[in-house]
Image (cartoon, rainbow, N blue to C red; front, side, top):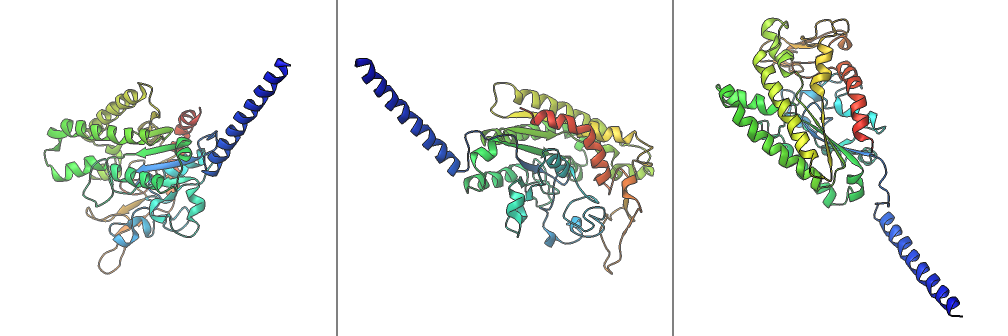
Length: 356
């Protein structure tokens, strides 16, 4: 008899505990956070024009927001979309490897149809930005993370969304260009500047960790000294040795930072994404990109840019007939074909990063 009473009490207690667990699971589901967040299903993007898919304001005009005017977007989708390329950029290829659509640019989050793109995450990257303010009146990396946090606080993204997400941080050299433009002796001050930049970058990345992002991918610097911006003085035949040396030091420090952030049981995992190695491999593929240091869209004068027009509305640039045969689209940015080829180099590392 005693055993029967004990068994009855045990059964009732077990049933009560199970009911609480089911109720808790239901509450989690109602809040948009299932018990298992699942695989990485959202991508949050931060950085500059190597990742921006439309955050640069079109109202800034053609001389600044050139990515919203022809010939940008001529290969895909055959019209300008705010991407600094003839088509897709790094963000699009990373999203595709995650089997999701490219996330909605923050600036377009309230546009018709944006809710579908927001289901893939959000892109906060804006052309011209840097870790610090770069003089381009664009949001630096910390301010982009502020916007991300505001989306979490307002309930657009749940804690589960963030934990089951990946972040792409593309820092492509605007800080150094701004330093060189305002300091004629910047090479003498580069070491101190770089130390300050990495201290700030570390703070920014730690914020992403505190916000709960599961995987954080940080691009190293591409071969900046080999972009047409620097190779034009030699008729696109030679890279800048000074710039290439600075890039190598930046990338060395980034490897150290990724290793440091990866220690100590961090809630997030940090990884360097070797864009430098990917694009450097393309520079050696003369059979694919015939004149790899020359742009497809070339400005006519030193002070002009691809996409610009003069006071009479005449184009101050010329465009090649086959962008897919060029590594660089304009003075700084790769073509869609170059990004596609570079991502073949990056695809396996990205998939390994995202694999639990």
